[in-house]
Amino acid sequence: MKNILITNIAAHLGEEITLRGWVRTIRHSGKLLFIVLRDGSGEIQCVAFKPELGEEKFETAKRLTLESSVIISGTAKPHQKKEGQFELAISSVSPIQISEEYPIGKKEHGPDFLLSNRHLWIRSSKQWAVLRIRHAVYYAICDWLNQNHFVRFDSPILTPNACEGTTTLFELDYFDEGKAYLSQSGQLYLETGIMSLGRVYDFGPVFRAERSKTRKHLTEFWMMDAEAAFVEHEENMRIQEELIRHVIRTVLRDCDTELTVLERDKEALKAADAPFRIMTHRETIEYLRAQGSEIPHGSDLGAADEVLLTKDSPVPVFIEKWPKEIKAFYMKRDPQDPNLVLGSDLIAPEGFGEIIGGSQREDDHDLLLERMQAENMPIEQYQWFLDLRKYGSVPHSGFGVGLERLVTWMSGIHHIRETIPFPRMIYRIYP
Ligand code: 4AD
Ligand code: MG
Image (cartoon, rainbow, N blue to C red; front, side, top):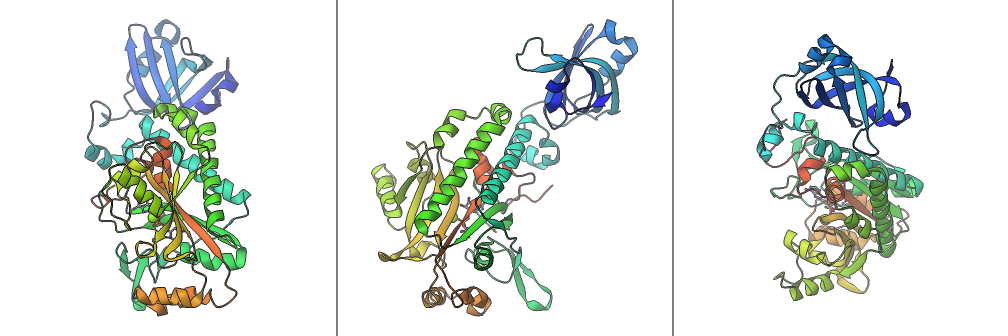
């Protein structure tokens, strides 16, 4: 008998097939027994009728408990009640391992319990759905970049310097070389890559010793940094918009089941696939203040301000042209106003907050050096970065997408901790 994955069942209607997986639910009454089997690719209801299956096999099936691993054979057919779904008429059941009493699912659990049991929690249907959306988002990003001439350029995780300021650095001793740090973003290394490959990206874990205990912060998360030579600020935003709209369309196309499991408002996602809005930082502050926020001029947005900003916007909003004091040293000065930089943050709708940070980079050696000195940075550690401005410097831009922020938005879930298999937060390192 053929082993098949549940997701492929439609191609095997009427055939005797074998499924291998875990018991999601089991119930029996009298002569009937129903098992919902899941195998990672999907779920299916399997039905046994005692007079047909026989006493002995029926009793074997009844011994199965939640999460028992099992091999079930039978005939695939359309579901009796649910259009478009299938079920399996069981002809044999072979338990692989009868699960001990499963700790999750009997009652409502608090987040601490679930996080301590993350190794089991990932099996539940919502977690399954989020992790599959993460997979889809990851590959949608890579596909778009590959199709648009970006070359993958892996940046190091152990670094001698900081990319995003020193307040959130994880530090470690590196043999006889002194201190090393876990990377906060591969950006600075990507800037070297464009001088060889033109357009590059990396995609991997980055680290921030965030003291913040919010629903949007992890200490280890995945970032896709992209960088492109000869791209300036406006085009940088257009690239981001195209990329994100491609991700939205891919998720809507490929993750319908997952979005349904999560009860995600699909219309809201569809509505976000339209031209994004662009506001300057100054306009943003004025808008927020007019809406009742007390945010001072010249400051960064808090979580509540991000929610307020997109309250009436179905599409993401770029905030561009930030005061230079609150942005990183590498951002290029706005030629129209030296107090501003050509940076942009992309804020997702529905209150999901910042998903991308990007900017045109300072490409003038002396201006960059001046800015680094003003911030008391250890210049000798960044000599290689300054070199790029000596040997064929070109205008260039890039941005970093926070994978888990994007997945949180696509999934429509409340907390970022569910978007990565094993979340790392200030108070959590187990399991
Ligand atoms: O805005 P950020 O700090 O930008 C950079 O690191 C740039 N060097 C990227 C670049 O230009 N190549 O971080 C980028 C994105 C944020 O917009 C957010 O989506 C995500 O990374 N992010 C976090 N996600 C989860 N937990 C955290 N603690 C995050 N910090 C940033
Ligand atoms: Mg940012």
